Image 1 (cartoon, rainbow, N blue to C red):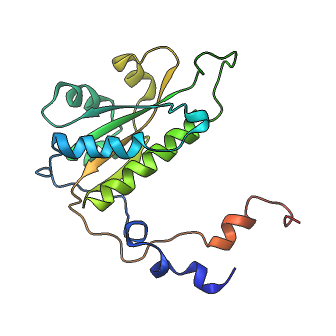
Image 2: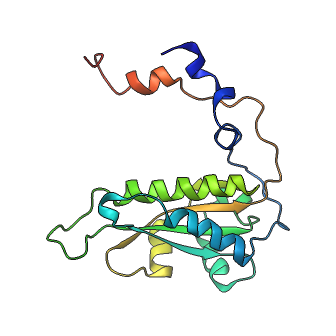
Amino acid sequence: MSPDSERPDRLHPLLADRFSPYEFDPSGLIDDPTLHLLLEAARWTPSAGNSQPWGFLPARPGEPDHMRLLPHLAPSSSRWAKDAGLLLVTLARRHVDDSTLLYSEFADYDLGQAVAHLSIQAQAMGLATHQFRAFDLEALTEELRPNPGWAIVSMLAIGRAADEPPVVRERRTATDLCTAPWSTPAA
């Protein structure tokens, strides 16, 4: 790979400028049209067999579902996630409808793509996202009781960042992405 392929200034600004804030502006509320547009971005994500195995529970400050989520956040995420304009619980439908398959090996992958699309849409709208799994999964599942076949996977905090992006962002090199998984170079 050429050295230029490692330069972040060649990336699209929506990707190069994305960061996960550890502080949100509590006045940066997410209104209904903004929430709808974020969900539209997720809706148009490609998926295996067009199964679209993702679901979300949006919860904004002041709404009853927001109050249901907060007690289940870990102390590490509670410090900053509570101030986001939106907490979004992500779920994957891991069973395949009208099929003999008992488990979709693609559901979590497809959910990840939907979250990525939603995150880039948020970035395009001047919003920041912070994806996290620092919550009590068992207690949250008991609290929310998703339908059979659905599993809570993660959460996103979405809103206006109140902290600045880091000056230096440590990332693995593009070359490492292709060599680290192998004990010997791929032929």
